[in-house]
Image (cartoon, rainbow over all chains, first blue to last red; front, side, top):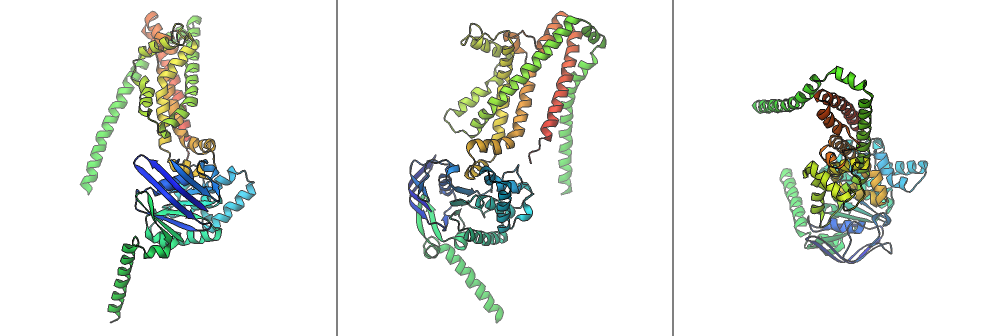
Length: 247
Length: 261
């Protein structure tokens, strides 16, 4: 569970004030908002890379506000996936397991398990620069999930994918997150990702959370209205075209 | 479309022309030095024990001091380069300007500066004039910006998100530094070391002021030019150039084979 209480962040001109943000265990939360409102900065604060001016970040009843990143139990998948370029896919995924000094057999078992789940067994000997964006994204996810984080942070993980791959990736993420019962905070500016993946939605504007609620509440909100209207228009147009064709 | 391609090729011809000119500019003095080289002078040097001993000790001093200064610079330059690449502090532009100072300070002034700082009657009276450590300190001083700036550029080219991901995955700062940053910056560190070594090997101005003794090869060349004449200076220069050339070709091969990914 993630609980943020009265968090104040400031880097140069960008200021964020989060009065309250709560994500329950096993929940998939979407943090929506236009570019440049501080979504990534909030993610960085949760991961431990930005020191808050005040406030508390609590993960599973433990105050981690001033703990170093490696002691928070939080894993991040950045927009560019950040695969270690000097390591093979296998070594990328095994990185955290080696740090935990697990036995070779145990590491191999866990890497193979997660690779099967994310359909990347055939990539294990490859180097990151030889992977497509979709493959790199799955490897980055595998590397984060194998660490069994208390909270998984996804920073626009689908923005580098073409529409077809994006749909497939969304399905895969949904399945893997449910299977592993992960708590996820997914940052995006794409409303469709919120509808496809989210249990709860937070909408951020001018450094503040201006909406919090379920996906269905969000769909009915004024923020999502332009998007919903667009979808309705497209559906109406398709139906009109279909009826014209059937005449 | 085809005329555009032709234009590109024409520009390339111009580029190759300019490139050849620069290569010729470097090659002409090099070739002339070897053209004026006299084998009988070399034989004379190797048949005069005192000259052989001077030559040997100059080579030993030069390579010992330059390799030591490069080693010290690797140890100091890597953390310094990291701080300059990743650090965000108010005085950073001033610190960067200070580090680049040895680039612009005239070489004899470097000697005078080090003399006033670390000479027997200097600010910190260590007495480094005319000692091996005087030679090392001169080489360190003039090579430092090359090492630090090259390493800094190396660290800057590594995406910060790699560090962040490694930390999230459970790596401490040191584990991240040794497992992620150092291997990715290895090429820049090697390049910085080669440049620093080259700079150290070519230094003479500051050495004339601070540490004439123990003589380095450069000082010996100047001395033999004055006392024994040009043919002797040419002979030492040729030997020095050949040794340096072999050394740098070997280092370049090592650097090139250090393929990270």
